[in-house]
Image (cartoon, rainbow, N blue to C red; front, side):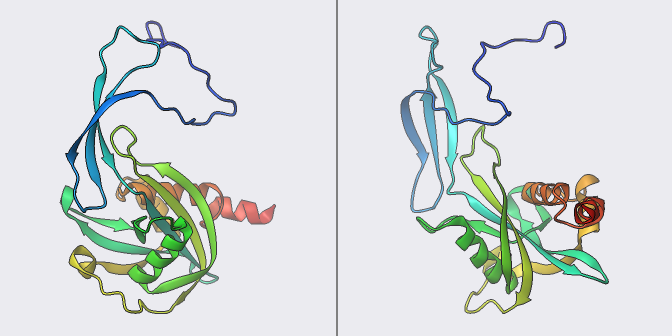
Length: 221
């Protein structure tokens, strides 16, 4: 370590390296916004363990039910792998993003995989024969409780959206196929900036599940 680097009191770090669940004491909480919306904003006053002389510190938490993300991949012997993507406007940041089919985990007790299958069908009109869980990840744990469950879907076929009718931004959303190599290039070059797209693309490519040289090596083995 470099000279002068601050060293906090050591806690046990697992081997192999991984995150662990831990809950610091909350002295009190106050709702900053809560209504019939699925999300809520609260403030917690937190005690740092084994620090009785310190005052509790305030942290704001956006409660979020979680989300599902679908990397839907079609393999074509002639054209190579391609990914089913969305082209969608996002008001919070004033930007149109290349995204993947996704949605909130807003059905209580529902398996995230079932939610992912529904979102793929409603947003794109496709269903898939093969599903694989790639990872679950916390998007911004400093303030947000959201965890996203990312799935790889293969064996795609178009079936239509059924009775689902898109509204608001989704009514303007476009569905398109993007060659996998172009998607990877866009992510690595910083042109594609939606975090779930970046996570799903790089994990799938790194595991040899999204075409490219790594996929060719995995097949060769």
